[in-house]
Image (cartoon, rainbow, N blue to C red; front, top):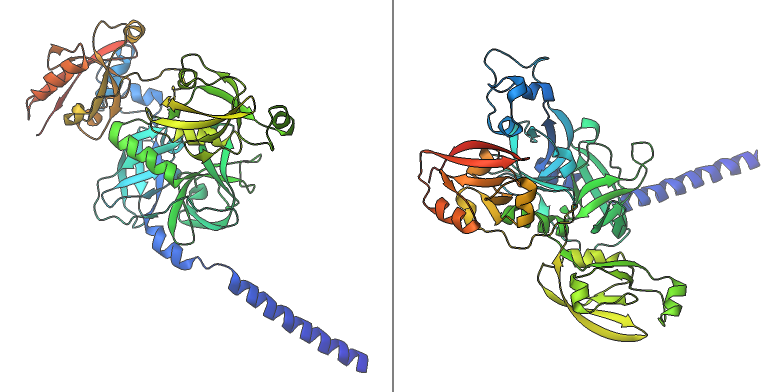
Length: 468
């Protein structure tokens, strides 16, 4: 009996001890309720609508087999006697986003809105508003939207300067269409390079991110946005503990460029690099493995002009230490094009400094812009550049300017796209950016103005009006 009594007392004491310990542990965990209450109103759900091709063909006044592609973009009136088969498509919930300004600018991922004919933003007060795509950047997977609204709730933006693995973070989004779902976790690593993109220093977390979370905000414990949730690593299609967010410092640089010029330019050094392992470090006379080994210098690139050579080991770029090779693209990509920076390299065991003027990273087709776009096209919301001889041959035109950026304005409202060729404006030929500027400066207001465009080697006319 005494043994039983002793066992009961011991069990009770142990249970009490564990309760106290668990209570203390629970109290040590972070509390997210206040953060979520304050931040959730600025998080939005994003739905898109993409019309089937057959529906698109039936939206215009021309016979189906006579509709040039360019007219399909500019003449969007529904056919009066031939409704689209199958009824009106319903928008599908694809992702999340968040409001960064009271006048309606919204951030999300490019892959959420890519190819959409219509973008619908659902606010926390259940309003559904159509959004305009201001610009998108495929490389960073970011898109900037704009809705017509005022006095909207906004998120508070933070910084990624002091992020460390182990910090608590929170995500709010619409996984699988479940709006305002909250998940929490920690930062697993910073400055991650992914096989799909090595110019973005991703934040890796173990926060549960699933389809529909894309484009949503990642918060620190101060309730400030430190990233945009973008990708997951998965073999099943669901969360497996590896989530990646675009750092907010990178995000806001992209936003600034999209607002300013309609596209994003990144720094380019013009080298192929690899990691320095223990054996390579020994062979090159380094005391430890670090830096980025230059395997090849591209002819006529910035590095070639600055005197870089294969075998150089880059240890510092613009006063930023290069510990592993992945650090270099992150540093170069965020450097303004045209800026001269010092680069420290180890060459044949000796440290030297090379000054290099950063070039512009070519696009996926290997093209690099050779001149800065004019900013005088803002009456239309357009930015244009002169055509090169090679572009004239490719697009089969003898004159014109190429659209390099489309901002909010008359041009975006009638569907002009980046890459369109403007050959005539107000019934006058356009041979250069200078011609475009001179003609545009004299355009009348409150009356129709014609413009001839070439898109996909097919010409067509559109009209627009300037109200001021």
